[in-house]
Image 1: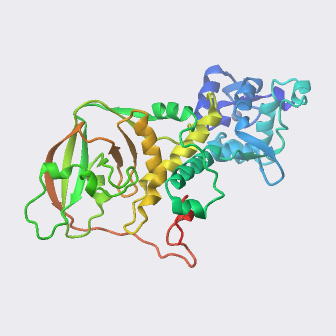
Image 2: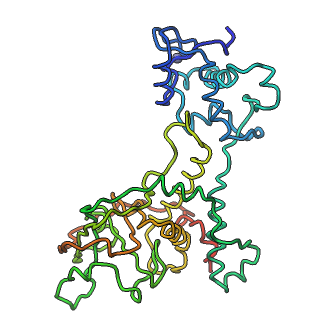
Length: 381
Ligand SMILES: [Zn+2]
């Protein structure tokens, strides 16, 4: 059998999109690859273009790279266990056979196609790198002292990130309809005050009292909310015995926010337009969501949040009302609104923290107390 003229079946694949494609397009028959009988099969050339469209996300490299079958499996779980666990490198053979199927050998060797038997690498996350450079330049522009310590950092204008980033905001945006409820907690941290916080004290602090956060600079007011009371409570990190006020806020008019909750990779790489760009964006927003969700430490240099502040500036300037991002402290998520006049506090209730259960592991020898943040080098003493 010439493998390129063979048939593969839907059960050769775990990828849902391919699985469905073959079930719909295929005819009943015997699979030449996994050996299943009476299954839906298609000739490999039907899959050729579909697979070839994905390969540009990888670049051919040297022997330290990986085989394409391995990368496809590792990154996207393309093949079923039957194929993955077959002996004799069947998964690699199937991958290469699909990639060559339907191509005239003359075209394949013309130089327009990589050698699919080669080793390949994942392309670098250049958009994350670009963001890093921009945010860093933006930050150093405002920090004369640091600017002198990092003369080699190339300073670029801050507003030339690709327009597509704004298009991405649009893809990630969602609307909160009027009447939607969000929560905000505040520790009752005045021991000598018996009077409870009023509704008006549950909103954002006045500019002169506001400290820097992930989404705002010092003296800039942003209203931090959570999607449920438990997450709001977890975010203020109260300790046992403390009284905490939790207020409900109601949205008054439709608000458009950029959501970083589900911004990772597409589920399947097949039949995707702009796959490479989506992967780059996924990596960037994933990184930013992670940065946003990290709790601020009490003794931290407030400037260390500049990267997410920069992102929030951008989103604000693009006309959105706020941003939502995962909570590292609670099971829900956070919402930071750039203005507070589109929400109304409804009521406030008081709770006492009865218990906090800590789960912990001892650090192993030489384990760092914190993972290094992406911009820590700017703040090292
Ligand atoms: Zn099969």
